[in-house]
Length: 298
Image (cartoon, rainbow, N blue to C red; front, side):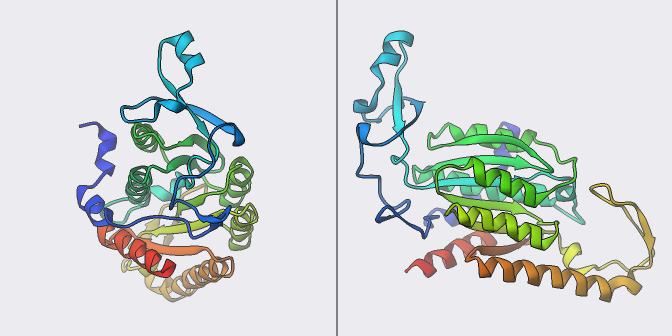
């Protein structure tokens, strides 16, 4: 089995099989992701080619390309895929942290893999951007089934080694994403909250719908340390030797304030904020969120 396939957990996929990830936005008079566009042919803007797969409608075959290459490719238009999902994966150094079990980055990869599988199963398009203090990789959205392999491989081979600047990245990507869609952010969101919220607002200004999965280690939330501990700094921060019991209350107040500010800011911009702990069973946590999302739409 290829290494990247480890991110496709059968239990998680089985749990979310009957759930959907349709955007709640109303786009051009129809609900995005529920139906194929009624617009066909030259009345919409050409987007890209994709390789023909058995069962595809041959009326969209580009015969000029076939005459030159002897290969079958289909023309795809901007409106053919109603829902475009952009996965934004934080691969900064802080995402490597784990107190026990899986790291925040691996947990984020598992979520991204499950959601990409779900979107492609709906025959919608999904793309991926990995970032730290800059965009490291950007895989353009596609609805082709083979796209999943590329996406998983990219996630698996992107290392976490740099500091991050979430706000700058969001402004950059908001300008890159020309077509409205669903932006799914997978990050610990360790940045200045006003700057972070400004970046999210840019996506909203571009009329994207946003889901933020804030992924945290239980030790970051609970600060369970007892003995004198050497805390190793990440993202250019220094090491600190300290007595944890003397710091616990101040740390918890500061961290809880950070989370409250993030939640409040997301709620004020009609952004779904989902806190995911790396000690949660992914199939339970993810299926619970998707089920509640579906319930809100009804």
